[in-house]
Length: 227
Length: 272
Ligand SMILES: Nc1ncnc2c1ncn2[C@@H]1O[C@H](COP(=O)(O)OP(=O)(O)O)[C@@H](O)[C@H]1O
Ligand SMILES: [Mg+2]
Image (cartoon, each protein chain N blue to C red):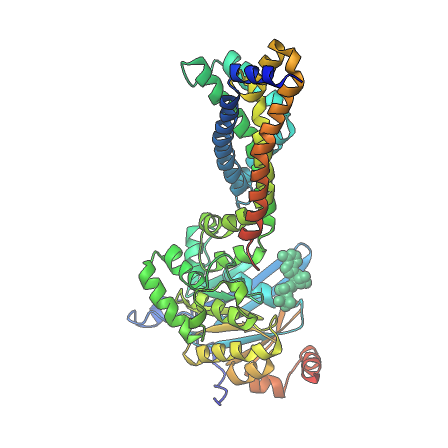
């Protein structure tokens, strides 16, 4: 393999910047999915049937549709057909569409992870909260959800790892600067280096994901509620 | 030793009309009134025509075989379980529908569970201050001052900064009592508060409850601790199959039970 030649290729393309784009996509869509997932799980444990139904509907729809289809729809349905625009700048608009698509999709997984966390909270906790006079919202906010989060660190972490890797589907929403877009361009122009190009991106993701995995294992033990 | 007080003459309790007494004395309502209360779990008729009046300062012990509806009765009083028919009044007020008003009412009825149910992620101190701060909006300083005093009263002041899991069962249950007391309840409900405890811890909890009763707290206690019932109860209620079969002073009930079910039950429970 021609390593010196490949070094030239690497400097020609914005590889590091591409990874940075995926990291920021992870951050914003992760934040959005955390908000959506938390709201959805709160609705699912609420005493109001219509809220429970709406949340169940949301979770099932986005958990069951393939991510690629969600992302293509953000581009072709939301932007092209419905003409919904978040920014005058094309690239910013596609970026925001990608964040929303990723957030909606992963929000359903966050909701499921949190629901497994809710299941780790004994029923008596909510009863005791009601018995001292907390309203449903107070009891969800102060008693149930904090314990649910701490009991759901592992599945939430798995969702985060999936999200990190899934941000590469943002190219389906025309975000061209992220890793899979850049990688595709590199392979197309320098097929002579295809193996090294693949390895570069694969190793890049391993370097990002491994510490996240270690951190999750550590946190899920440290944060677990002692009963 | 205190003498078993005389049976409260429930017929002497004024009816719930305000006009019968001078308006300067608003405390004419019983703390709890259950009128013809019925409740079903599906086909199962768990509470059958329950009529029960609890007066201020009264200590009532409910006994009866497992599955007879004792827990359910307790839980209907602060509407943790809704009822299907009849009426429940707390200090003359009907139980409101689920929502803010009900939350407010629940704050005035303390409840102690068999399994303690302390908030597992909160310190002992925070367990006790949470209700006053969140449900009543009392300041942190004020709530903590009162909580420390309550923890001292139940003998757990030194553990204020620990988590529930670091305490023994007996200590956890005493914290649970302090947590309920922090809301200044009109009434305390105890659902088998010592059933989940190791034998050596039962007395520390019963002692706290006995002191509470002597301080004049109105209490409804489901328990199998017959010694406690004899010493502390003003009235014993015997339940079986969703019915109140007997109501009497402890002395009367333990020496002269009227129904076969009660005789049977007492024979079994006093055997071991
Ligand atoms: N949430 C529930 N759903 C269905 N059945 C219940 C429920 N809670 C209690 N029961 C049933 O109601 C009956 C009375 O229960 P409970 O009030 O707990 O009795 P006790 O406290 O006297 O042992 C039992 O047969 C029990 O199985
Ligand atoms: Mg019970």
